[in-house]
Length: 151
Image (tube, rainbow, N blue to C red):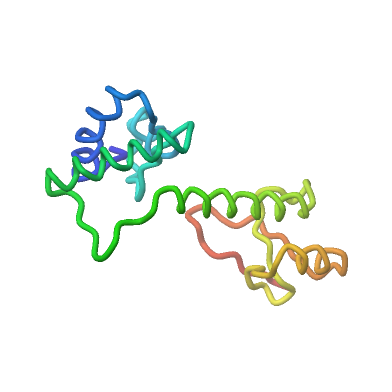
C-alpha cells in the first residue's frame, strides 16, 4: 500500500472536512501509489489548494480536527501556512530559473562540479560555470545511488 496505517487514518480524518468544503485534493506520488496499489510507502502526503484562502481555511479546520483527535501537536508555535506558501512559491521561482539555465539535452540528469560533487551554487554562478564548461551531467542510477564520475 502507498500509505502507512497512520497516514491512512490521518487522511480519513481530513477527508471529512475536505469533502464537505471541496477546498483541496490529494495529488503526487501518494495519490498515484494508492490508485495503482503500488507497494512503495510514501513519506509525505501532497494536499493541494487552488487559492490562499482555501489553504488558510483548510489549515485552521485540519489543525483543530487533528488536535481534537490527538493526531497533531506542535512544540512551540504552529507554522504560518501563508508564510510557508510564500516561501514555497519563491523556491519554485528559483527552481524555474535554474532549470532555464541548464541545457535541454541534459534534462533529468544530476548537475555536478568537475570534482563530481553536486552543484550547489547560485543561479548566476551556474550560468558562469556552464559558460566555462565546468559542469558535468550524470544520469544517476536506479534505486537512487549517488552518481560517481569515472575518468
